Amino acid sequence: MKMVKAVVRPEAADLVADSLSDIGFASCTKINAFGRGKQRGITVGQIHYDELPKTLLMMAVEDEDVETVIAVIEEKAFTGSFGDGKIFVAPVERVFTVRTGTEGL
View 1 (cartoon, rainbow, N blue to C red):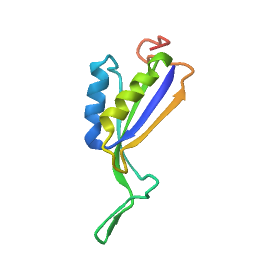
View 2: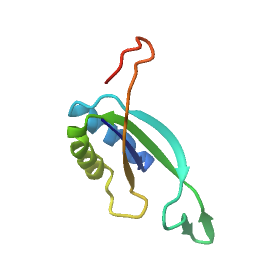
View 3: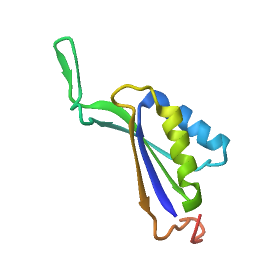
View 4: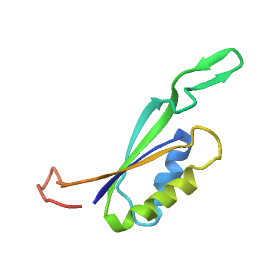
């Protein structure tokens, strides 16, 4: 099992989440965030914006589904401009449902 975390533009977050839901990945946590990438913000005229709004999408997926999830995120969040986002994949050792105490997805 893996934890997939995607930092995307806020305007792309719903499209990404809806597209993942459409192919069977309904569970997703969305967190509003601020950040900057390698470009260290943007400058518009004489104003420099150091941190830009982003949305963090998090979901636990089975190992065999990771590449599918990544492909959907890359396709739906892509604009071709700086700031499209990043995807992080990390192992998940165990998962529990709080209400029932059941282990696993």
